[in-house]
Length: 103
Image (cartoon, rainbow, N blue to C red; front, top):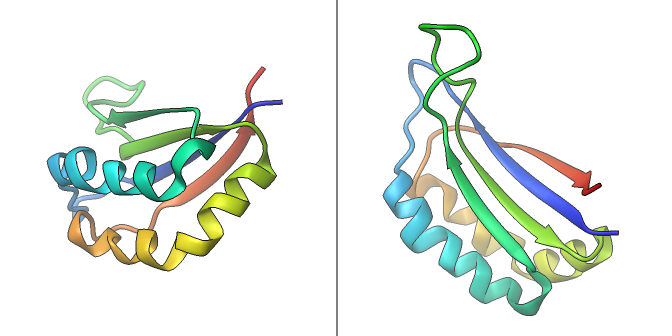
């Protein structure tokens, strides 16, 4: 069973998000720290919602794929402080995290 961890950054009038930093510095750091546990990854940059003229509900979403929840937890746990501590360098938002089974 493969799982995907989605880190979703809510959009708002006061939301700040440096997508260049996220893609070029944060994600490479995460991949280096978590190593072979990560099987795949992607970043979405929100551009619109499903309603014409409305902003995207999430300013950005990071996706990381793992073999299992345990593989994610075992690789992320030892590095959580460093990874989460980097967030103020690219955003002022509080992300929502969802772990999903890939079908």
